[in-house]
Image (cartoon, rainbow over all chains, first blue to last red; front, side):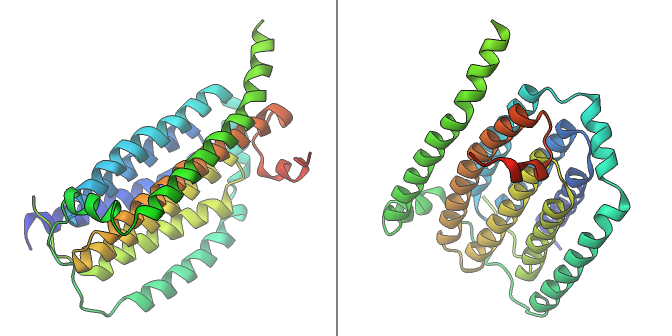
Length: 173
Length: 104
C-alpha cells in the first residue's frame, strides 16, 4: 500500500467524522467550520483520484464562496445564546433516533449493492486542459444552461433579499 | 501529478455514507440553516460519485458533471439563504415548520 492510498483513507475518515459533527452541532458557526473541514478533505480525495481541477474548484467555490455566503447570513441573523438552547431542545434522542435508524438501513442496503466488485480507479490523472476542451466542445449547451440557472438564482436571491435589506436599513435609520 | 488506484467501491461507499449523513441531517434538524448545510453535504456526495466515475475511466466527463452539480449547489444556496432571511424577518426564528405559513 503506497503513501497516497493511505492518504485517501485518512481523508475519507476525516470527511466522514467532520460531516457527522456538522449535523450534530447546535451552534451554526461551529457546524460551518466543520463543514469547511469536510469539504477540504473531499478536495484532497478529488486530487488523489486524479481530478486536480475539481479539487481546486472544491476549495475555491465550495469551501471558499458558498461557505462564506453561509457565514455572512449567520452573522446577519445574529443568532445568540437563545438559538443554541432552542437547538438543544430540538435535538432530543427521541427526535433523531427514528430517522437515523431508517437512513442507516438504506445505507446498509446501498453498501450491500455496491460492495463486491473488484474494479479499481484508473490511477491516470485528467488534466484541466482536457476538462476545458471537453467543456467547451460537446458540453457547450450544458455550460449555457448552467449560466442561465445562475442568472435565475441571482435575480431570485436579489428579489428575496431586497426587502429584508430595506427593512434593516429603516431599522438602522 | 499523481493519482491513486483504489477500489472504486470504497469511493462510492464514502459517497453513500456522506449522502446518508446529509439525509439524516435533513430529516432530523429543524433549523433552516442546518437543513441547507445538509443539502450541501448531499450535493457534495453526488459530486464525489461523479468524480469516482470519471476516475474509473480516466475521462473528463466526471469532472464536468461535478462542475454542473457545483453551479446547481451555488444557485440553490443563494435562493435558500434569501428564503432564510425572509423567514427570520417574518417569524423571528428559523423553524422550518413556520414556512408552511409563508404563502403570499
